[in-house]
Image (cartoon, rainbow, N blue to C red):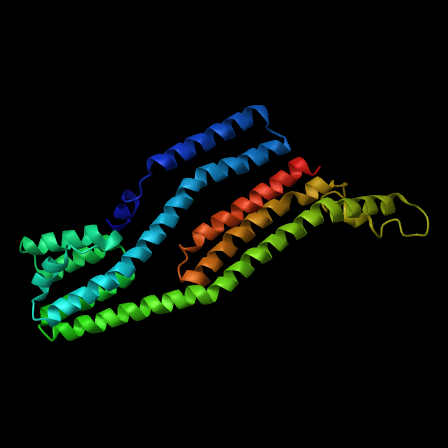
Length: 299
């Protein structure tokens, strides 16, 4: 049942459907008119960009909204602490502060207040609130609040502790992002250098190596006819291989490196593998377009 809910929650929005349709049209036309040419792979790279861009934008917006909700929850918890410290019960306090502006958290606060006004227990309403926001930070804080309210302890002290904890988590997260910014930039720079090295090998070193290997293989003087022959040959059958054939694995190497480098950057900078998907998308797109574009325009 849990797996079914996971897949049923995934829905494509209109921009994503349009992007996929345009990408499929580009790939189909390329298959018909440009199959077997270098331009075909360049257009496939453009199609990947068009198909993935709506998902990339959605991920950015989702991350930004989650961050805003967590920041606004800090403001919400502070207002709740002030109201409870004034002697107002927690349920009444939520109803009193529902009309304040909490940005992206407003719909969830209004739903929480509506549930409480209908007589739903505070604990159950808070659990729904945490589940709807989809934030682990909010879920942990809400669990403490709801359990404290159920136990009937000094709820104002618990709320104040939770507010301070959320503030500290948010502060540490901002400090982490600031500290890791240099590392993120270094990751992008290193990957760009890696692309340049691959292009230099493909267009400069491999042609020289292939020609050198072929030339030394055909020479019959000095007893060195087989010394350099391996540079321009494939192991299978010893047949001569062109620089283009030797360079074919480079694109897959770049794509693999870009994908996993993006995941590492996201994990280090924001602590989430999911946050690295946007970096992976950028690096993979850059690698694909640069590699295929170089094959089209630099030959």
